[in-house]
Length: 271
Length: 271
Image (cartoon, each protein chain N blue to C red):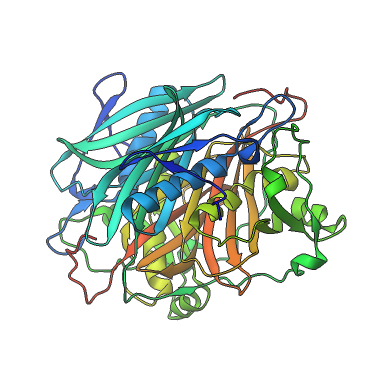
């Protein structure tokens, strides 16, 4: 089975990811690599290079990778310890930096294993309805065709979102593939849409960054993404997510800051 | 009045911060620059270089800056737009990288200004008691002498922390100076201690990173730090913080991952 993000290793510390339609998002005429797919590809490259599991990673999004491009991923160690590796990944198309990633990886035995916030009450996925993607996507921006994203039915969720900032989403890959840290990075990039929902707008804006913290991965098909829009001001928005397995395990947390978009502004505006 | 982090500008994009006792933490014999002071210095350097306010920043902590050293800060632009600057800062002592920072800065007019989670109920600072620092600090590690850190009195808070992962701290500078994004970066580095508290241990561990997202700054003396330990496993811990002004404004959020420390392990252990 092909991974959702089929990176190709081209050297000890170099990889490529093709920017194909099924990894792209964007409104009509502006099709680009989904930010979470970039971070996810970097996470795969890190885990394959160092043979350790991801602890945390943050991607800074500098520029767009357009449909048809190849993103070259360069992994570099920043500090290698007995049980922790700190590293960076730079994603480029030609000479242009698309994103920069900082991360730590490692696995240490004999420490506590717990979480402090239990999975919230939520209807099971089969009683939820498909969450529409806003704004309407270019026909070549097909990321969402490979994902199943569900929310509670009816208008209640919009009211909850604007009043509390909170959005609960079940997300899974449509292909039956294991969830790993790279897939959680993809799901973590659903924070912007939830910020948009909390503001009562379609879409949210452009991600400035994407931060993922992995406690541990357990087998699951669906992931419950519990998103909290935190605050907005000065033209930016900030949000946070907890990612739970179906069995209630808190697997990871995530957070992002975004450049708010208005429908009044042309969708091609780059801040 | 001297800033809590008195960086000195040495060029268009270069600054230095002296590692003095009042910016240091650490147990006996292991005195080093407080991570939040490193991120805070980088935030000041960014804001002075680009003349814009911080939106978000993440520091990756690579190595320790020892008492008596000078940290050289190099600022570089990654992408400069009409209203947003994306940038990096590298902090070095000699040839050694101490930390790397990624950040975005900017201020845009005409967008929503709100937060979704109100300040939690908390006793006022004058009814709280001093929060002791654990582990016991080296006599030359004097960061906490310049800060006032308070929690609810009595043993209840330890029970709350271990059961819910939550710790509420009032923090202020002892000198009467305005709060800015750099000071919030310092306060944001109180996540590790709260993870330690949630695990029922003194101290928490070494920060791998420090992430800060600034909504907006309002005048305040005390800042209420609402810390949520999220999860621990594989020898690491993850936590989150909301930072409120005295008037209830959510000014910023923060998050961190740490390498868990046990008292059984030698305190000088570097992961």
